[in-house]
Image (tube, rainbow, N blue to C red; front, side, top):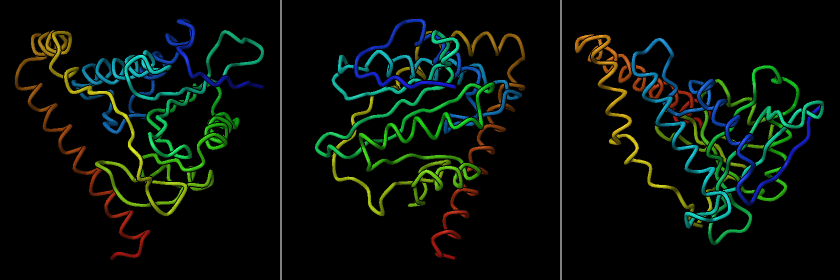
Length: 228
């Protein structure tokens, strides 16, 4: 069994640490990048996506000027153990609306209703929700009340209603993470370890992967919405 806690202020550090560990462990599963661990650039994205989530966790409570809320699932038998989280962004100007940023459930607690319970908890507060997901996850989110609306980047855009909110969703500017000293250091280390040719190949592999995911999402949505 598990229980849920809703945070509108920063959560305890031990919970934050476990959330960030889930981001690192399940990067391919939860990120729009969805890069495979076999790609040499995987460590770069582990850092950048992890740091992005870290910044959003810091922003819970409004300290960075945007609205961020968090739902955390914990094991009732071990209440200090986080087994899932849902990070979402309420929309300014529309009290019913929010956008899902990141969600993960620990592998040991999947298929036990954790994701569904967290989503229902969020939708009870913000019934007009939007998210993006991989094609393979569409049926799961449809069962939670979402419907296919379009494509965003490499993923399928879904909404609990047949229109998007007119309100504004606050987002952190995370572009600087990718040009940070830490990312340059990781890239330099990988370059020294694997060589320039291997790194160029990794970038080409990543770009092909992005193209394949984008085309897959576009084809799926065209078929689903009857646009073929």
